[in-house]
Image (cartoon, rainbow over all chains, first blue to last red; front, side, top):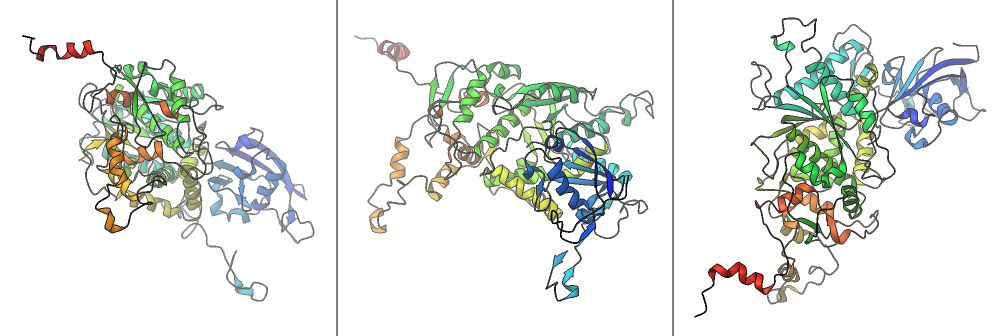
Length: 114
Length: 497
């Protein structure tokens, strides 16, 4: 749900990715509705929160270990599939998809183990 | 956005990023529903994705079900034996188990079966199905045993028998007897520090199979050799289990992505000669066990990428328990290949299927007349001579201290004299190029630590069995007493007059 300045989302991890996030599959979180264009640079212009921001946010706030298994070059590592409301993020603009209140974002690793 | 000029001065300098799908966001099958997933540039909705995936799976598997491959299927599917599934706990095998269950077992003789019990739809294609899992924690200290988790997953499917194995069974005479082999009379150790791989008689079979396995793994020369060896041992354990369960088919959950990884990785490690077998093979034990039949190894997911498998597993709520990462160190060929292919699949998804399709067209120039005793795949003839000619194996090689051409005729090449002096009982001539390379090739970096076992490494039971089976060279060396020698010649000796 949106509360003006923040957006509430449901984020799920599957295929072994949950092991990097406290072994918890489902997370409810609130993120700012508007975020700096350049992640971490508060002085830059703002944009609506998108999945690229969410990935960085998850890395800094929920990820417990081994960032290299989750992220690579400002996006998710190859082999991680992202679904936005049960739809492949490639159909939604990938990292540029603007988050909406109540969105369900799922990260699935296809590389569980070997 | 992709840069194609100076965006500071030119408004049109930034191109829009190309979408990952071809045309519209509408499903290409039904052309009605909005798409849910992009598969190699094609968009599918959720309703059309399931039949598309099940259809591709059956289209790959069914031409190989009847004894004559690709034969007419009008008379239905009649396999020659039972079914065995190799299950690793990973994504591919979890999806395979689900697809096999849904496609060939779930509708069998149900109360709501349509068309009567004799209708082909309601008869099971395979009379019996076994799921075989090989626990590899014995080879990788510090990893956990997942047998019970796998058992719980398999037991959710009521039509399958569960056969748990351990990778150390490869060194266990009792397991070998259980799958129909004969307990070997003699055991051998091999010296992996010597490229000729000389063998010596072992005093007795090791009673501790896990110690034998660890000694074998510890003797391997490179990081790449460890995962390759584990894969070979698991493959042979599965094949012998399929044989013992009278299975005509062994199905593996190798997806298009993992097949491309294993093809490139195998070729990089010298397995180019068996590139066809990497995708599909007919196998029978090299040591004669029971009736003459074959096990057909099939990978029904080989046209489906890991993305399709992951989406199938997520939408069907499958519990993927995962498997140990045997690829290990980042510098191993397997791990490097996997990183490359997975990256390629994200950026250029169609290229990954091109790898598999191209490899399926490859065939060796000459047929094989021998089989490797270790991997039991065809071995290229004359490979050791070729290897000696094309590669520098040590700094003492004749090539590096080569005399001028006019002296070559009068000097005996060192290699030949070495060959004469080579140990009589060598494993090398009975290995394929890839297995010999795995056991002996040193790396300039990333070598494993030198093992105390390298000089007396135990061998897997099927290798020992072949060495002592009599269908090849049969030998045992021991010093005989003079009286023993006389006794063995007694009937040929003329009496003293």
